[in-house]
Amino acid sequence: MPEFVVPAESRTETGKNVNRRLRRRGLIPGVVYGTGKAAVPVAVSPREIGAILKSASGENTLFDLDLGGTRRKVILKEFQREPLRGKLLHADFYEVALDKVITVKVHIELEGTPVGVKLQGGIVDFVTRELEVECLPADIPEHVEIDVSELMLGQSVRLRDLGEQVRWTSVSDPDLMLVHVITPRIVEEAPKPAEAEAAAAPAEPEIIKKGKTEKAEGEEDKEKK
Image (tube, rainbow, N blue to C red; front, top):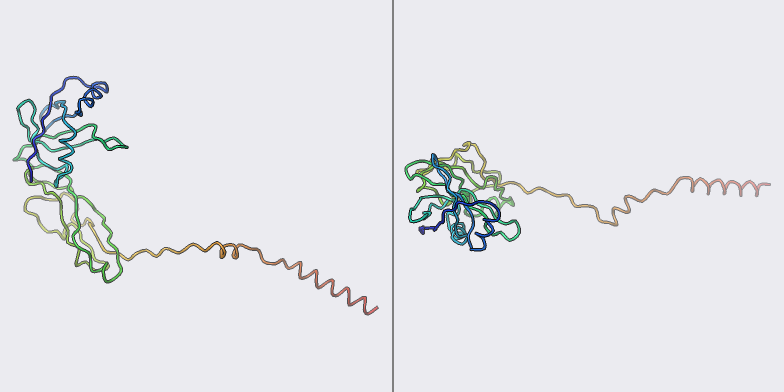
């Protein structure tokens, strides 16, 4: 895992105008804080933060924030992006103690194609895509991998099926459903336009048939006279 060192500048001014000036300089505003420590406003390069987000461990990457020559061991706690272009707008950093357990969310990745999909026509229902775990900062997993290749139709993997982990502990319910193989739903096809029109067309009124009968009876009476 590569080690990241992100240079940071302390800042005393805040507000929209200040943030605009920072972004014109190629920086974004941020805050670094920790348990029992006052929050410190900072400015950092969005490129540095973007590189961390693209790394294997993503936002759970443990890295150094270099603030005026003093390095702080942090993780990226929160970040904001522009809705349209996706540019980073703000970042919050949480300073950690390497000997104290923290709680983070870790993504789940599936490995393999289930037998129930390949041979039985089932589909994978990926129910839970991330886990909340407790661990030491240096033991944060890049992701949690689940091998689903042996799953048959109707079978599942719950949190308890992962067994005990050496470096991290999940804080979720052991019965939490993670993934299962299910039968595809059958969607009824809508009637074709021609069929729909035929079904909606009214039946021929009985009065027409009745009229023809009365006319025929009148003609028979005339012939008798």
